[in-house]
Amino acid sequence: MKPVLDAIVKLVNTIRSRGLTHRQFRDFLQSVQSEYSDVLYYTKVRWLSAGCVFERVWQLKDDIVSFFHEKQCSAKYELSEDTEWLSNFAFFTYLLCHMNNLNVKMQGKNQFIDDIWAHLKTFKLKLNMFDGQLAKNDLSHFSRLNSIPSVNEEKLKNYEDGLKKLHFEFERRFQDFSAIQTELDIFTMAFNINCEAVRSDLQLGLIELQSNNHL
Image 1 (cartoon, one colour):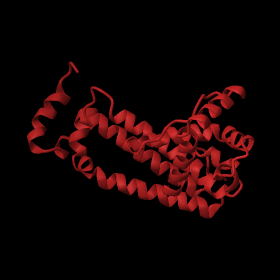
Image 2: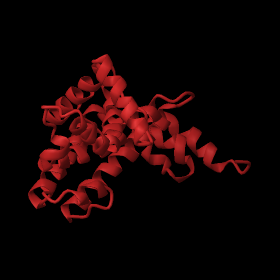
Image 3: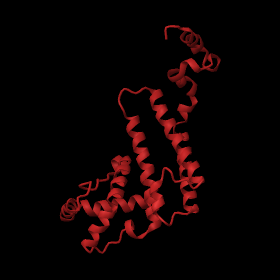
Image 4: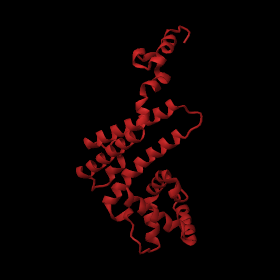
C-alpha cells in the first residue's frame, strides 16, 4: 500500500501546501459545481484518516486530472496514466474505509469489552467474505475495480492474499480476545451457552441466570 499512499500524499500536498494552487483548485471545484469543495489533508499522526483522504481523492480524481491539465502542470499523476496503480488505489480506498469505520466504532462511548469484540469479529468476517469473493472473481464489494480494464486474475489473487494477511494480523493482535471467547459470550448470549463450557467459578451463577423465569 505504501506506493499508493505516498503518491496520494504527494498529490494532496501539491494542492494544499501552496496557497495559490490551493485557492485555484477550490475555485476550480466551485466552477465545475463539484459535490466537494476541497481535498482532505493527511497527517501521519492520525494514519487511519488515510481512508477518508483516499475516498475524497477518488471522488475528485476526474476533477483533479482536469485541473492539472488546465494548469498545464508538468507533473504526471497515476490518477490518469497508470491503470495498475489506479486499481490498487481503488482496492485500498475501499479497504481503508472499512478500517476507518471499525476504528470509529471501537472508539465509541459507553462500550463494554463484548461490544469491542463484536466489532472485531464483524470486521474479520467481512475480510473472510471479501477474500472468498475475490477468489471467485466476484467484485460485488469492489465495484470500482470493474471500471479498470487491467484488473486480471493475478491482480485479484494479490488482493486476496493481502486480505488473508490482514486477517491473520488481526487474529494475532487480538488473540487475547479469542482466548476469553466463552466468557465474552456470557454477556451477549448467556441463555445459549452450555454451563459446563464456562469456568467453574461462573457455572452456578450462569445456571441461576438461565433458570430465572423473570428474564
